[in-house]
Figure 1 (cartoon, rainbow, N blue to C red):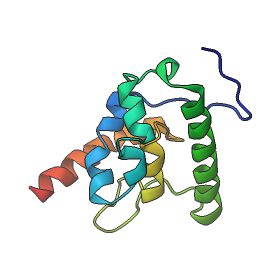
Figure 2: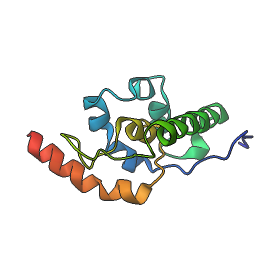
Figure 3: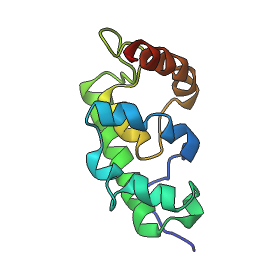
Figure 4: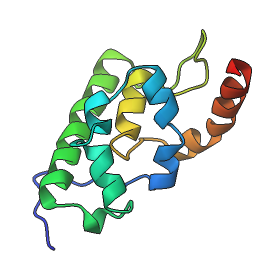
Length: 126
């Protein structure tokens, strides 16, 4: 299926990379709609994490969501993608978590490195 886009499509995070962050998104109350039965993240899971299995409608919707939220992060949060202090220090901000639930992050290498911080956070909670 060939899709036409008004804006460039940002790279997709792998489904496995996204799944790592679901429990934190749940805990922080982020992307409830995206994670719902009719939301993007569910569609991405149903597509086995393959963008080619997603409808053009979902892919266009994702482009618009990511673009809109990235502009908000740039404008209102000085491009801050990770918490710098407090309980969630070193973990993605709420806005960054929302982008992850739409299978994108502007800095996937930094996100990958923060998985260790997430593991430590989860160990401290137990």
